[in-house]
Length: 205
Image (cartoon, rainbow, N blue to C red):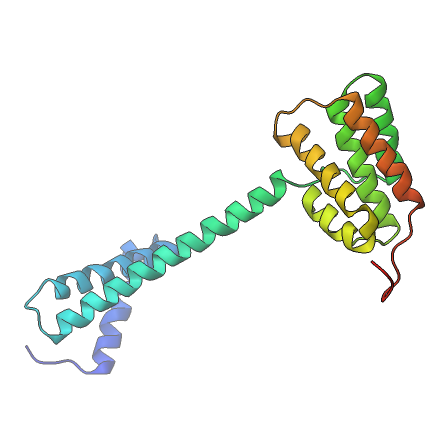
């Protein structure tokens, strides 16, 4: 067979793409088809005579498989982290002030809905600390993250904040029923935190 030059190859490729079948094929479909055609050619070469070209083709196939697996794994981990963050978030979609969360907590407590009252009271604590710039207003913050950051600004309350975060997680995700005692503990912490002042930089812990 007589070899063709680059200009003739380009002309034939252009004629091929102008055929009616290509007019209806979208670019993603075309790229998808070309990719698998390329993989198929590599596999044919890899299963051929075992020459240097076949070895190179096998290596390329392996690299493609590794690349696809890495991409899928990265996407799954990204989705998992995003879903985990949303599931463990302290606040809901609606932004309320500390006073509004506190009022909601008191209303729920009056009805004996202790689990929900505990949730709202910790949200009041978190929002109050944000409003006073003792913690950053971080979207998607979890109760544990709140306790960790607030404990740095108010080290004297670190243990109580950790216990409050655990109480929130218990009633929210652990199917542990809230109690009056747990709510009153959370409420008392809220009142004392409202009067607390952060430790100055370089001051005693």
